[in-house]
Amino acid sequence: MDGQSALQSGATPLAVRIRPTTLDEIVGQRHLLGPGSPLRALAADASSARGATSVILWGPPGTGKTTIAKAIASTSGRKFVELSAVTAGVKDVREVMEQALAARDLYGLTTVLFLDEIHRFSKAQQDALLPGVENGWVILVAATTENPSFSVIAPLLSRSLLLTLEPLSDADLGELIDRAVADPRGLGGAVELAPEARSAIIQLSSGDARRALTALEASAAAALAAAEGDESAPVVTPELVSAAVDRALLRYDRQGDEHYDVISAFIKSVRGSDPDAALHYLARMIEAGEDPRFIARRVMILAAEDIGMADPNALPIAVAAADAVQMIGMPEGRIPLAEAVVYLATAPKSNAAYLGIDAAIADVRAGRIGRVPKHLRDAHYPGAKRLGHGKAYQYAHDAPHSIAPQQYLPDELDGTQYYTPTANGFERQVAERLERIRRILEDRPTRGRGKRTRE
Image 1 (tube, one colour):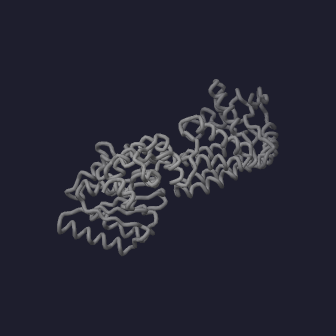
Image 2 (cartoon, rainbow, N blue to C red):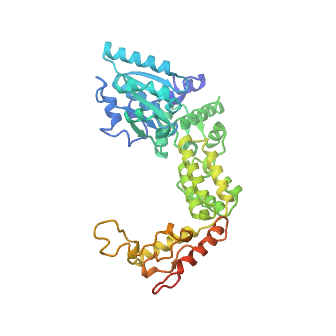
Image 3 (cartoon, helix red, strand yellow):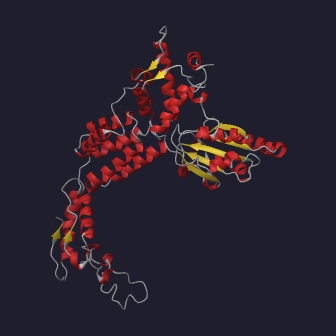
């Protein structure tokens, strides 16, 4: 069946038709597929399970987890069994183990068990896998979009090799799309793909091969329908791509000026306390296929740099949002991201801690360091007492208010103040407490001490 007939007949989806059958045909994941890699070794050894290692493939959707598993089975000549954690139970797992043991003992055939979405398996269901994996009845290739450290039991993790898959790069997606257009198993040249449409599909796919091929197939079908009766070759245009995926095409080049303009506007909107503008730019980045991990990193930096001590809860909330994105992926990850962005935009702002550390680093780089005061030096090793280390040190918890009035900075920097809190949010309380603390610390005998603030 040619590409046009396949599109018109509603045959097997394009992503399935052109699925690679060998590791060499797989696009992307070069860090896992090089010569001598565990996956190469697993695909090459068909004689037995000896030396073969069960693996857990962790990565976002559409990065090739199922494809890798099937390529290993078909290349090595092993028996391939696929289970989905969504529908399979303990009984199904045990049946596979029994059949795998029989195939090994009777026919010398090793079974590759591909278990999709292993994170959905309960502890009892994962426990049922252990005998087969431990005794080599099966080679487990498990796939998950969630961090295995949280979703897979420790005994199974310790018996498997954890491999992390990355989202496909734009170049990888371009290669995959070009192959699908030309391959007889795919579209077989039934349509032409305009360069702008190719770029649009890449941007809208967010590193997901399955999403790219689905968008291509839908766009190609639309092009064929639009060109019916026309003798010229159907052309997939950006407008057809937009209509096919029901999403407006954004002017957003992840390598160009628009990328930097949008992220700059996003940062400045959060800093400027405008949650509506912040959500707008967040939506533009998400819809344009920006890596959600990049967005999450920016949100964490914003929390530390621009909110800081004015609201100490901002950074834990940003980190939690980043963890959630990593664990649940997109599109659901947009929700914790939006929650964190709104929290940061509406939180009181302070960059005092950020300015403080930069001022301290500037002093260190300029050579303004000095020796650690003797009473603060380590006094636990033999000979330290003879050197006077720790002598006259005051244990803070024994002092009133747990604040010991003694010198902490080196002589050369004594009296320097790097941190100047604002009157915003929680930092107002910090400023009031710090003023009292500094009065107590200054009430001590000193030599040559003068207050020095950062310039």
